[in-house]
Image 1: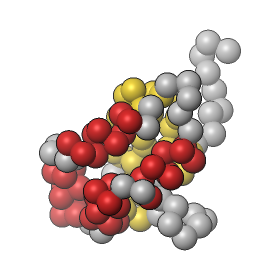
Image 2: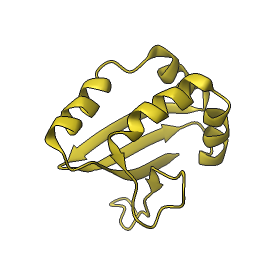
Image 3: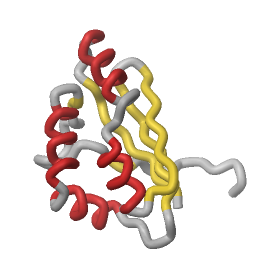
Length: 110
């Protein structure tokens, strides 16, 4: 499966640079938690202050299962608290929601 998610960053060049620096040295426990959830590949792209994350997952992956795993992992909670300094959830997001799933509107192969 493939998932595309979006999130905004604080519109501050210094904070955006810090965010990108953190992602050059993601903690090994975070990478392990991502793989353990069934994410085979993850890429994050940025355009100004907008982030797009693309996930390639195993068939048994679910965003809900990943969220539950994250809540039970103190290292992931620590990472997420640190990243919150840089991230700006969408105004329509519920409390605690950050990355929002995107709707596919076109597929060249369809």
